[in-house]
Length: 398
View 1 (spheres, rainbow, N blue to C red):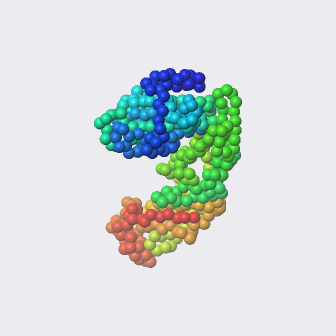
View 2: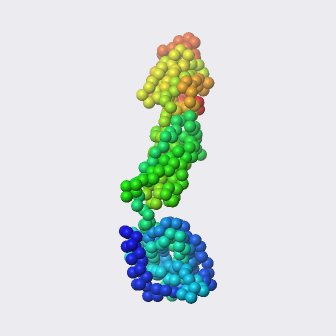
View 3: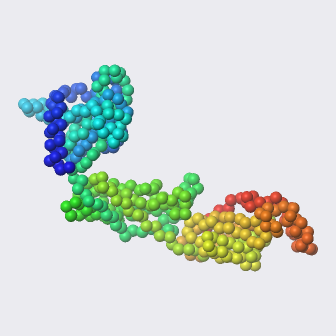
């Protein structure tokens, strides 16, 4: 809608008002507060004769609507303060009035007998709204109001584009941390991105304008909002993962910027597998992470590739109860040794039924002799009825 058309609508609206000019004394202001766009205000009312007053000075010219919510039989007036014809006093001139909202459903209001006072406001001019009830049956209650901008005059933006040379690399521009719930996240400095983010506004007339690291462009405010908790980025393998975006808005037009966080590559991790009961190395144990499996040597040691952050691994061998563990890699070093935190597994599941029970004892008696038999019987007594679920949770921090 063109500005001239908006002003014509405003003129028609003023003509339609029964009392188009109402001079009132400033002493009627019982209380007033300055409005902020899109904020819902709740104020008590003493009855149908009471009015609450609100003040607003727009920074940008446009069409604005003053709305009531969940208040039946409500009404609103709009005034501007002007000099009287004699030029000796300041008077309040009524510009508009509303006691109904034909588009209440679209506005999110509860019914048609809410008010929706729509008017074209000029930048820099101070306006005064009043709100109350027109029903004499109202003796007290709460008035809920909100001011919104339907359309700015200068909202001629075609699109917004964003660019930045800033990227983040884990363990270089930030670090892996754990939040209060125990979930892992990558913490980085958001201001490093914002101070280097170039915002380009493309106008409908074919022109464009760009700024870098600023909070305004062509006199209009730029707002930045993150889709996540500011400095938190959860890895894609986490159930908490959401796209890591920064939303940039100018005069109601928005664009998203994808924050680039590079993984620094796989690490070579050396670990050790031991017998859960005796503490002795377990040769031939199989360590698996995703599609990579490695077998321990005679010393119970294996080397396997892991990524930064959380790595879920499983450890087992031919006659053992499988165990899972989480290895957290939080370092930029490419080769990591965690053998000081050995992973214990229960060996002796000779029947592969995922529990140490009488069948395993029978196997020991039948298949072993001498010292080996004595050792296995001793272990069995310590492990009887042990299941895979009996393992305590194991998290190894690098």
